[in-house]
Image (cartoon, rainbow, N blue to C red):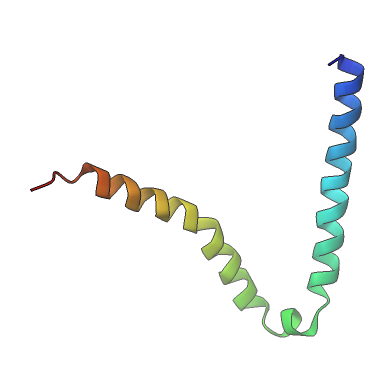
Length: 68
C-alpha cells in the first residue's frame, strides 16, 4: 500500500470514527432516560471500562494457583 493511499484511509477512518461517536453521544445524551439518570450512566461506563481488567486479573490469578 502506498503512503498516499494509507493516509487517505487513515484520515477518512479517523474522521468517520470521531464524527460517528460525537453524533452518537449527542443523540444518546439527549434521551430523557439518560438525562434523568446520568450518574447511573457514568457508573455503568466506569464498570464496563474496568471489566476487562477484572477478567484478566481473575484469569491470571486462577492460572497461578497450583493444582492439588
